Length: 151
Image (cartoon, rainbow, N blue to C red; front, side, top):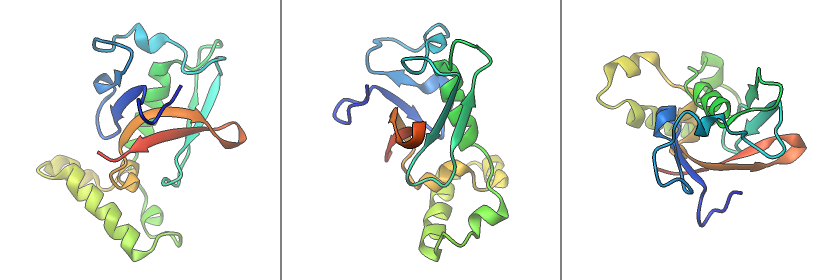
């Protein structure tokens, strides 16, 4: 039930799962909340994308009833924290300006954190500042589009 004027959730994809907030809840999210199904009707597999991101996120549940919110959000966060390869950074689709924007996003994310700087660029840096997940909507070909905004 995504609505851009009143997004249903807030999760900084540079952060951790426990920082997620839902508009309808007037309290912190707990473990029980994360056991709820991610979509109606429940699905055993969800594939997510964003138009400014070259990868997809595949979330597959071990629960035959369907993917839970916890599994979905954890899968997204794990994918975002994946280090990129040399080929990802120097691919033919990216121009020098885009590489500079990705490098600037990495520098902003890791400022003052030498340990994180040693890990290098991660997939989340390719969002170039669009790191706030506000919801998901049904997209093309049975996939789900992540609705993101800038910090």
